[in-house]
Image 1 (cartoon, rainbow, N blue to C red):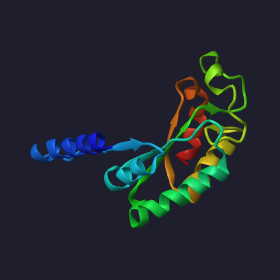
Image 2: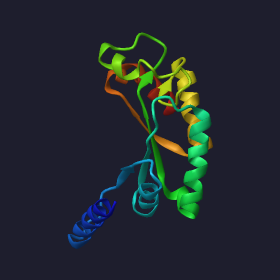
Image 3: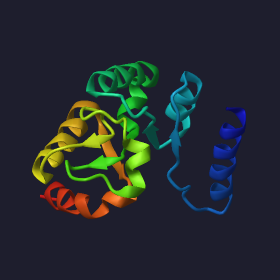
Length: 151
């Protein structure tokens, strides 16, 4: 943890010394010590969830993070990784990784593009998650969702 904190400080210092704004810092982790560091230093916190985590655990994790972050919570950008998009065939490259991911896992977005966009909006409004990464094999399936989110 100390090494990560030192690296973040060194990056910020290097940019400050050059008279430039520092890049946004993204940290990911589940342990309390890393969450505390992320709350203090990061601009974005990637929520690390096991593949089987559902909405209930997501809500509990957000409540825990709010307690740790206090007033800083609203200043954090929260990120979540999505491994499966849609209800179609899982691409060969993803089958081994996601074979045990339940249908209700937060790392799986099921439904039509509109339903997926609604899920992402709800997670943004309810939990503050506004940054989503999507596994590369699902870029094409996710494109119509992006169009709906821009509306």
